[in-house]
Length: 238
Image (cartoon, helix red, strand yellow):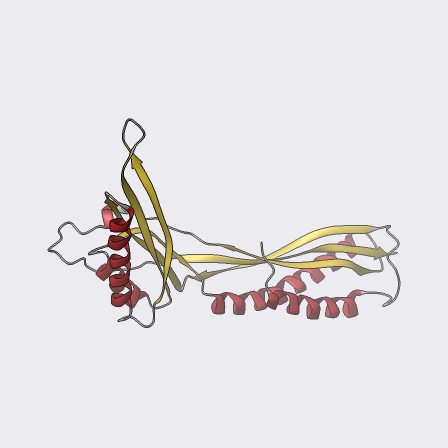
């Protein structure tokens, strides 16, 4: 669960509307009696429009300098290739280096790995870039999700729907408890997402031959579920 800055702004607006619409007395303090706490949730399934991928280069060398040269050269070449795809955001990721020991606990070499991360809403360009990079790098993971712009727009709509659902449930409970009306004591809006994140086996996505180019992959991004919950307490007026 997370509450974004947009959520906070919307929460302030929604809370003000709820207080105006539902409080029997604008300045009355809650008594602590006849209070009900409950939660409503609204959700919507939406197609993923963003792809994230991580590729890496792993190498071994007898000394750390030679290892760093190999890794840096590989990543620099990958970044040059990535510049051909301006719709894909590329960043250097984690880099790890660690020694290898013999049976006498003496350092006999070094192993290292350097990552490169990709993010884009352009699936075609990303797929082709991944194919180009896989001639020298190995895929570590591939996942799909909803871009911030698309998610924020949907969350704004769902916050309104969650607020209306909270009000309707409050009215239903008021009738069920044979009360005249109710007022809001507290109400909170929270957002959440359920992202399917398929992970692909790195070895199966390597090129079979150094002489063969890697074909681009067709993406099936799937869907994610975005939800907003409204939880709070009302006080019944009898």
